[in-house]
Image 1 (cartoon, helix red, strand yellow):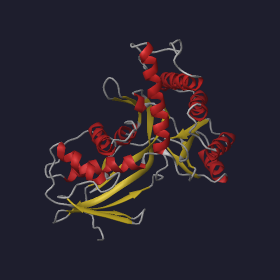
Image 2 (tube, one colour):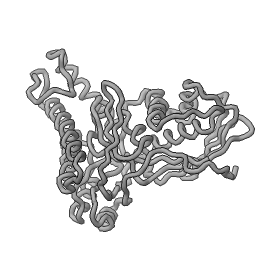
Image 3 (cartoon, helix red, strand yellow):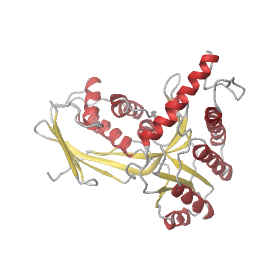
Image 4 (cartoon, helix red, strand yellow):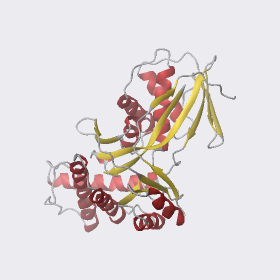
Length: 358
């Protein structure tokens, strides 16, 4: 059995999904694979050659022993959904997605794992990609009380270019636009996910609570720039306005993406505007990311932005023409470049019996 799942980039709505605001994300043509088979006993053995690790445990012992025990949490979430596992598994995980760099490598693994478990359960369910994304979110985020939103799990599970809304109910809408090539650039700097998430999320939630104390009818989805901000200091007002600008920028992108033929240069400029918000208001960019974006634009990219939580990790440039030149430019300043496009979501790549070296 072979399962594969893509990484993802966030085009619009970065650092907004955990506030209940929508995002536009795209699954990318860099994937993680889980290759595995059932064992005759009840052991789970997971080979991770990219990391030089082997993880093993037994189905009877699913207590968490690590901060992010995703393989155990995935099994527990599936069991709560009624799945049972008479046998354990041998599997190998390999990934072409930059690791811990803001492209959802961890979520792609968890999504693949949920899909793998569904296929090899005693009575395999007929789960949709959206359902797999939902369960991956439970296993990766809710189970460990982490502060991210749902974009990573849903975008890697469902694939393609999608518009995700989390309020009042989860909805995933496919967008048919063909955007062409992007170039992903890994800065090779470790990102600071938890620190930045806590700062960007918690401070803004406090800001919204202050506004609600003055206006109990405050709604982040519909409010305007005329909102009474008398209880906020200058920094808090700046963050509030940046959140609205980011929200409104996504709406502009949806209008453009709905067109039969998009204006590539305008779309690139929208990406640049998104990056300016992330750089200037949320302060999540770095000098190296800025250098990579600058040379990418000079080499012909039409726009770009930092991707993921920030403080390091990846950026991407929109390069529908001559992505090779843009990739070379990014590598000239120390980045690791990948030419990418839109890709499909999690899938069963093969059901053949596979031999795994133990």
